[in-house]
Image (cartoon, rainbow, N blue to C red):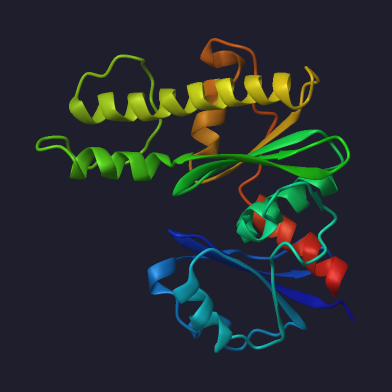
Length: 248
């Protein structure tokens, strides 16, 4: 009988939940993190729950809701990633899961770019060692800041753009945020490649809600060399599965 592992990725905006069996991730449930309750776990049959959480209140909810023993991901949990970082306890659990997923792919060195509430870059060298990263405001966070800190700019949802010149305020904001993200990725990857990898091209993996949009714009069709090699919306869950299988 195949063992089932419950995978839970709690970010500031959304929580993703799935059950994996035989190394495969099943249907993913996505819930706004502030709305997280014990209900999604009722009736779930699994032998282990592997959790990455960056929201303490949600962690407390989970602690009393899980149908099986929990494994809370942190720097002490083996995941196949070495850590070369001064204070490893400060690394987010989601970032450790992303690094574990990247190392499991076997394409190193690597950079993981996660487009969520924040945009995070995680840098893994050719030996599978976590070196550190970059944190910047996520696109929805930046859009909200523009709205809240100005008198007239509207709250704008991130959507696909077809031009580099906006014909409305919303379109101009959208273009600014997306092209800013493309520029951030290009510059960050270029500098990390030069400073950390001594010019060796890393494998760049993107995940998170806006990854596909940014990857499209930063590809060859966006007017420059391709910078993102893979977009995987389930990367964090895959990392949790890797960690779960190593610790089951």
